Length: 492
Image 1 (tube, helix red, strand yellow):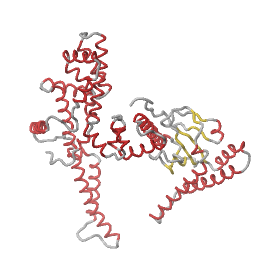
Image 2 (cartoon, one colour):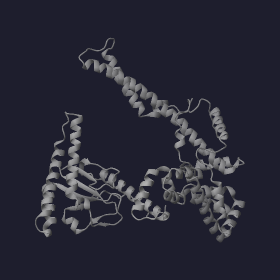
Image 3 (tube, helix red, strand yellow):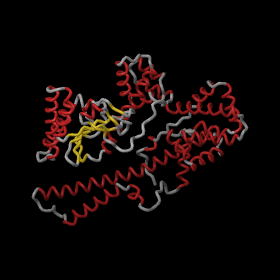
């Protein structure tokens, strides 16, 4: 039933994710055990076969759905062209084209509506209520799948078991851990391999518990303790080998021009430094330059890894915080400045108009600390940010006018922009004149008079209070509901 493969969606599946899903599903675990029991290659081959099955089915289902979607898009394009030709003819002052009835236009619209509806329901559009069949003959389909697997030498997708790396990890172990492993391998080889090869934390816990149950007291408590440590060592080594092969690392290193960075990556952490080199070498180069500009040594691999992790966590937290805050502050009816991924750019994070007409200026501080004493975007740089945001909004309106001369901006937006510009001028005047002691109260009053609110959010942090100095300026912490859980400070 399936045609020539064109999309190969299965190649995008991550091997570790496939195996983690297998470990978490009782039926898939049983499949692995059953196949392993009838295969000379044991569980290694059964896991590879399962991965191949999943990739192939994803390939075939993807081809079915994507092929159907493309066909529908082609039909939609034809219908739109037909409708557009008829409407253009009429709008230019003519009657309906020769041979076209009024009912024909309605039929075109009905067909277009049907195609659009079915495009949003791909499975129903292909088979309706019938089972989704990938082949007319299931036996032939299974045979072709197995022949494809055998032709590839039993190596599915990108997954190649890192036997050499696991062997090196075994040889590097203390002799007592090696002995515990050998003893477990003699007694329960399949269960031992399941414990080593588990891809998820939950899967590993279950596999280790199963292994200890099967051993049933045949190892002493000290041997069991050493066995657990040995299984962890081998599991980490195997996972590391799956994440980064020698060929993959060599390709990444060849793309790095800086010899110091190349050396740091070659000896670096597979989970962070080397992964970044593989997936985003441009970002790696940028972050390396910043690290060196800040005084980082050219040979400080651990220091660079710590810098990378800190940058990634704080950047990711900032993006998450901005977007979470935007979707959590229900009082804002219209955003003039929404969340984006440029969290390192100076300025306000969010600007919006509330249902009561007040303008909200929000700076998200998704910090771990419970209290914040400085919000420069809404204090020291408030005048600059008010003017910059107002200018950006006016520029956006001007662009819309250029694109559509008939565009009419919402009066509320024009009023909000004027109030922001007026507030900037007044606060600048306050900063130049009068007593410094009364300045916070005068700035707060100026903002109040122009219906501007300054708010601090912490959607991905722990900030719940601000200092009295900030409160005197009119700032307050805006609740965004349950905070987004933060990642741990240590570990991978």
